[in-house]
Image 1 (cartoon, rainbow, N blue to C red):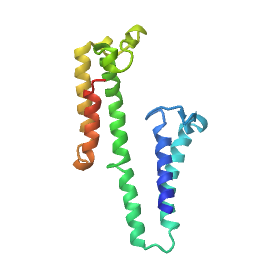
Image 2: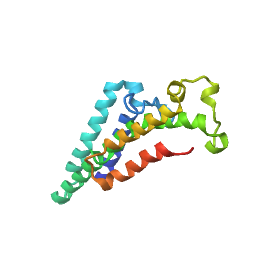
Image 3: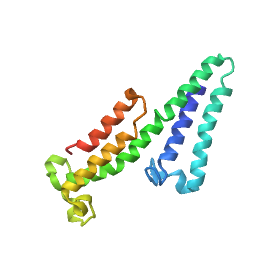
Image 4: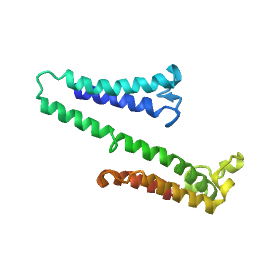
Length: 179
């Protein structure tokens, strides 16, 4: 049970940090104001950090009678899952791919039909939105998408290739999708 509680604390921390303006910039989670909207960004960061620290402390102290080697192994696995080969790597790809996704969305909006997209095409043009194709043209926008995809994948250099493969596939999916 302590490990499950620790995972929930880590999950809550990841949601709090993910909602911050420097990440996904979400104001609502499950229909309610996000932590940083109620308490401020500084408190949201610190609360998330505290949850992370407490998750490890909880595993270490609430596991009376459990072999110390097993406790160390659990803490080590949790650290790997949230570190540079886990949650952090995923967030790096998410942040790097956000611009990529927007560029590709803008290109698809002007190059595909509503039937191909499965949604109304050309809405950005009708709404006179500033889009990448409007600013750069379609060809330069495609070049930008290629560069952003390449940069997102470069962020994964040095990670375990087996663990990086799904993240690379995600970046490629975003870059080369048709709808």
